[in-house]
Image 1: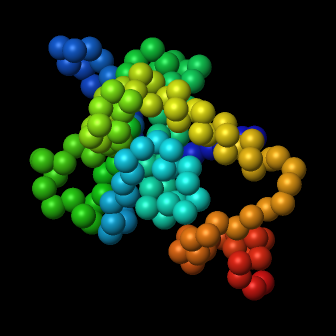
Image 2 (image 1 turned 90 degrees about the vertical axis):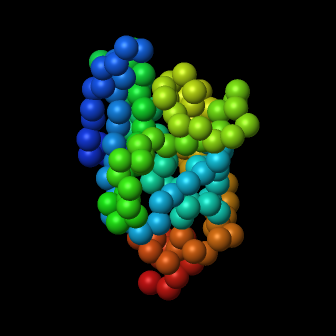
Image 3 (image 1 turned 120 degrees about the vertical axis):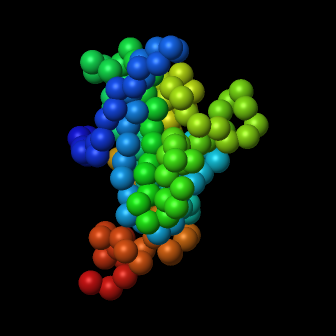
Length: 158
């Protein structure tokens, strides 16, 4: 399975703590996406609320897997143009609950904080897609409104 994408912006940031790579995905959406836990990103009933995060974390995953950036901390961020009223106060860094933290916090280093769990759910989802068996539609019909594939699954008429 080949999956691709184009990162909107990559910044190499140097500081006293060391270098890091910030991955920025720009969005024109009027609603910022959010999630609390990595597992939510792979829940078919939550897809409308968090696919921006899934995309940014996927870019982080790819850059930390066997690339020239695999040894540098990668920080995923989303920048919403329409909703960003205070750009100086908004870092855009994605927040999720880390295993060592009960409250959602920024991801300073994707590989250290999120990668194992993200990879687990990504592999599980891809395996489910290619496993033989009966196809089951998601229970939430909201994502179907703009889905390019809703005629394939039978949710909407051709």
